[in-house]
Every structure is written in C-alpha cells, then in structure tokens.
Image (tube, rainbow, N blue to C red; front, side):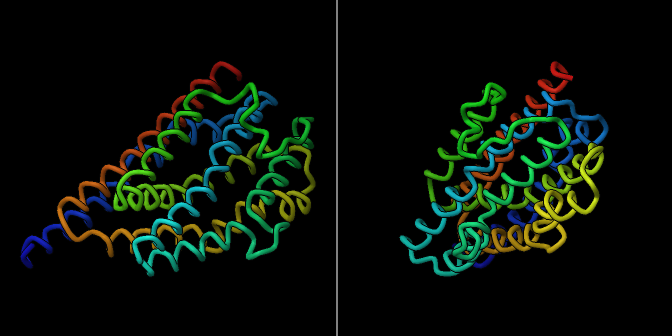
Length: 253
C-alpha cells in the first residue's frame, strides 16, 4: 500500500471508532429498564445468572488474546493484555480474582435484598434463568476470537469499550434497588466491585489499550475489514442478549 492508502485506512478506523460509540448497545432497553424499575427476586436472579455466565468468559477470552499475540510476536498487545489478565486474576492472589470479587458482591446483595441463596459463577450455566441468547453470546464470541488475528482484536476492543458503560449502568441499578443492606456494608462489600472498575478508570484504560492494539495491527484494508467484522459481531450479539434480557424482565416483573 502507498502512503495515501495507509492514511485512508487510518482515517476509516478513526471514523469507525467514533461511529461505534453511538451504537444502541450502549443505551439499550435492558440498561434503561433496570435503572428505572425495581428488581424482584426473579428479575435479580435473571440478572445474576446471566451476568455470571456472560462474564465468566472474560478471563478465558483475555488469556486467548495473550496466547495468540505471543504466537505472532505482537509484543505490544501481549504486554497490554497480560497486564489486564493479571488484574482480572488478582495479581497472583486467588482471593482477589475479579470472578470471586463479583461472585461475593452479587451474592451478598441477592441474599440480603431478595433472600436468594448464594451461587457460584461456575454454576451459573446450570441455572433455569439462563436465556438462549446468553448461550449464543458465548458461542459467537468464542467463534469470532478464534478467527483471524485482526478480527479477534476487534472483538476485544469492542467488549472493552462496552465494559465501562455496562458496569456504570449496573451500579446505578444496584443503588436504586438497595433497601435492606446497610450503607457501609453495601459500599464495602457490593458497590466496591463496580467502583474498582469504574471509579478507578480501569475499564477506560482497558478500552484505550485495546484500541491501541487495534491501531497497531490495522495496516491494510483487509485488516480494517476484519477488525470491523469482529467488533460489530461482538457488539451485535451483545445487543441481542440485552434485548432478550429486557423482554424476559417484562415477563418476570
């Protein structure tokens, strides 16, 4: 490619980043519903089971990015995602892994607010509340990140971009629905999970790092098309999951 073609690819990528930020997945009906309506035991269980099962894929996906970036000698991506993986896995301390952090926070909330028995993240897939769209989400993400290298990076970038907005919306819902948990217990045992991602800027940094990895690997029109395919594929299947969650809430409310 000549300089003009390279500049055009970079320009298209910047335009894609800007356009992606306005995708309806970031302001979907499910996010709005849980902020404006109160949970009951069934709608909270729906949220917990599907969020556990959805998010259980996160560490596996990040580890996959690390393995593939190492295989192609993409050291910049390996370094950035290895650090993200270290954060997700508690910097070597199993008790500080985000999976357990999330599990404890959502179980304390569910038990106190809705008298729900605690459940494990690894058991969520067996829940009667798991919807087909969550299963489809996992299957589609695994399919996309197993395809071309640029396509995988597009997926990672899209999901990291989505994470900050998702967790902020969920934190708003938890605040709205707190009725029984004392403020100090809620802050120190539940909201701390969301704040550790949102207030500290961790998710924003993850999104910026993922975008940089995409930029570094977008050299040709084919790279751009693959990145776009991966990103849109991830966002669209996530949108389908949230839309289905919204419809299920209307039934259970």
